[in-house]
Image (cartoon, rainbow, N blue to C red):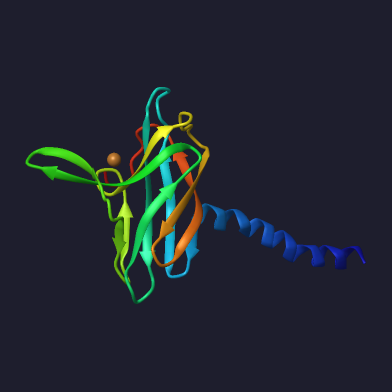
Length: 158
Ligand SMILES: [Cu+2]
């Protein structure tokens, strides 16, 4: 009887062991839109802004558009583009949002497109999560969490 009980428990243990892996993958989905690994960086105590980075994939057959983002961690969030203007790097807000073409992945990363969290309510701390709501023109709104990494952290390749 004892042996049998052990066997019955095993699948539950396996399921529990598998859970952290899916949490680590850190992805979200709404309609045809998939959000991969949203992240940010810890900020110094007086920093007024922070960047938000993620991958957005449109698995559908029509284009969609990231139109807005909000978070309790910031007064407002703008969608920014970074571009070389001569030899000066400039940021500008994308007023109409960011288009996600059908079948494409758009990456928001340091040095390119990013979310600009403006008016932080508190400094972002390493190894915490920041709630974020993304709104797409067609797919609607999805709640995600930004994983906060160490100050100045960069994705591989930078
Ligand atoms: Cu910016």
